[in-house]
Image (cartoon, rainbow, N blue to C red; front, side, top):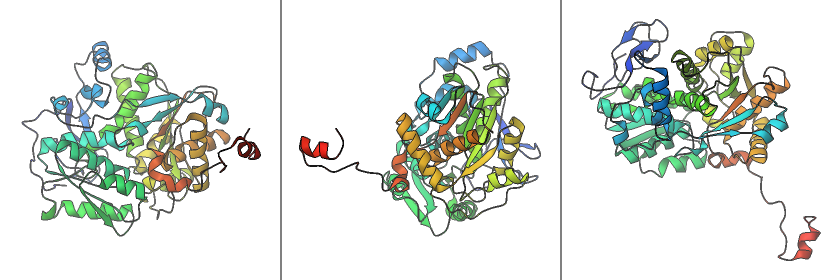
Length: 426
């Protein structure tokens, strides 16, 4: 599917080890460019790499000597050779927290970790994917950075564009959490509310790409999607490196479009192929909110096709009723021996508070989904508590304060010791 663009070829640019765009359905290959759908079967395109010539030990040393951000993995990413010289927010290398308190609460004995991506520049994992898309936008000569977003991506695009000197114009559902609206707007770009849900927003953006009004626009999660999606691989790379170049036994990943989960699996497979980690089994589990659980519903029913749903959940960052990567998530969950599960809004709130109380990590609603699903999977015997488990927190709870409204003061007292004792606090 051709799109309007400023630059239509990569013949004169360096995209590192990226070799071509390959269709995930039929395998058809096309040259690198700002396209996202196969011209043969309309399947999604993704980056294919040429890693030939890499020496495992030299590659490991190069990575370990690299910067404390995603660019330490530049040899495995679709980035120009001079990326370090360009203004970028440089996200990544976030904490992998050994969550012993949460482990005791959940009965996990094999080691429980929280990969806390709230430490990124705009406090969500979306900074990783936007950083990749931004570099592709430079290569292809785009002048405006845009996206369809459930909130976190809008802020990440606004911040990255501001840093890089791009114009930004992003589109969101009109009824997002106010914290995310403010965070997206503060960077000075244009923020447009669309009457409808995320699927309506995404449909509009796809139409805009084919219109003259979209000339010169790089939509990070549409026409730049093959490059954008690769940013999620860095989560897999970091987790393995932070575990001492070892694969976890189990990973629990939130599902919106499903792209993050599929690219984490891709990253783990690349590490195995390159010899950077031992080839051993791992299981990937997907987590959804009950009010938007098309992939979970399909998994439980044994279906290969994901039927769209109308979202109705407090986890708005995951509220994608027609997830593009849903079928691939099902494949990965089944191939690895994992599962896809969902939790109610009430369970999401309880899990947010549980993580905060046990580990001092205030997660947004998506993090509540992953922790809540982890607890549910352990209780049902699906997730093995004796195995090393990594749970993703993809964003900061300050963005979704409405979810925990009502949490507040323990007591109000006079500034006297007697009042303190009367409140039963002594």
